[in-house]
Amino acid sequence: MKKILPLLSFLMFIAAVSTAVAQDAANMLSAPETDQSFHQVVKQKFIEGGPLFMTPILICLILGLAIVIERIIYLNLSTTNTKKLLTDIESALASGGVDKAKQVCRNTKGPVASIFYQGLDREHEGIDIVEKSIVAYGGVQMGNMERGLIWVSLCIALAPMLGFFGTVVGMVNAFDAIEAAGDISPSLVAGGIKIALITTLAGLLVAIILQIFYNYLVSKIDNLVNDMEDSSISLIDLLVKHKHK
Image (cartoon, rainbow, N blue to C red; front, side):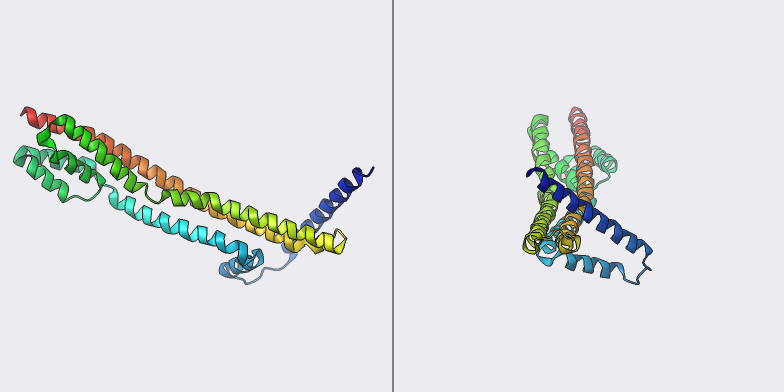
């Protein structure tokens, strides 16, 4: 019997909280719309969630978005029309040899042109050396494209954990209030539960936003890497044909 009483008390508490939440939802639906702007609503929820817990989550969002924006700009500038570049290199090899082809690569921006230049610069050492040079420098360019993504991944993992930390602290405060009052009242613990829910919501929202951008960046990098690999094979074929001529 002694083991059942705490369980019944906890169930009664959960039922009371659920009733209070349902009543609040009904009041919100029946209440007239306010003129609060989106900025004011976000500011209010930030204060209600507690600056101590919401500030680290906000820092994760700002840091993550800053890195994402920088990477998007860098990757868009790194995109090259490889078909046109290969055509120009082929024409340059036919008309002016390797030196003219290297000049075409110098005048073209992007990692693909840089890889081509490294390969053409080793053309006199043989096709095998050219291929090794392209592979080695391709790895360097891939590392440059992935730079900073580890910090975005950290923010994605850290934001929900910070939210859950605020949740745990809020629930501890709620049960401390119950212990101090000696009574289970929904209004008594509403503040702690509200902090718990808002911090969890903020952490998950930040993680969702950054995860979308992270997947976009990974997809963009994969496309660029595939383009580099395909075009590098085409460059080696052009050099083989040029040597035979």
